[in-house]
Image (tube, rainbow, N blue to C red; front, side, top):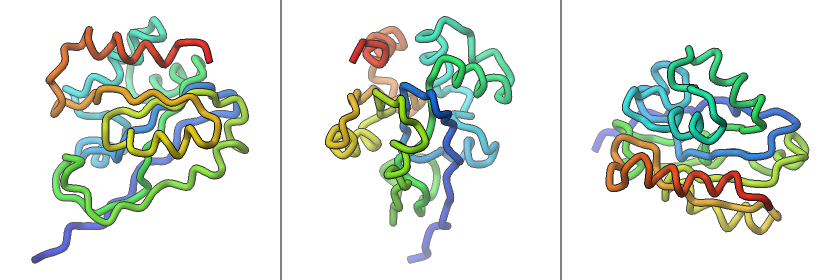
Length: 164
């Protein structure tokens, strides 16, 4: 059986004043090709976060989305640093290697809440809760997860903004 290529994820989008960090599982093929988080045009991530912060992030060029995200004290990363995978589905991930999250306390001393974009990344929630972070497992923004409407997803994503 041929092996899948070893893939490397994207760098974190964080700042020292990041208060809310959203972790995906691992970038999909479109995101890796573009070297941009949530680059697939049907992924609802930028619309969901835009609704949370009251800005239309989706219509902005990618280079303008990240500073806007950071200005609202949101950060972005993935639970996996690398893996083998054909295609974009989490179910196809093989040989996962987690990111080094031990450095978060140092890099983001104001971090309070960690949101997990989907069930795959949500498996890491207990590990973050043990370190004192409030955790929220979110319905996936992926186009592969259409069991919920945008409004239903947004209702759950709003839990990221609840006070600690």
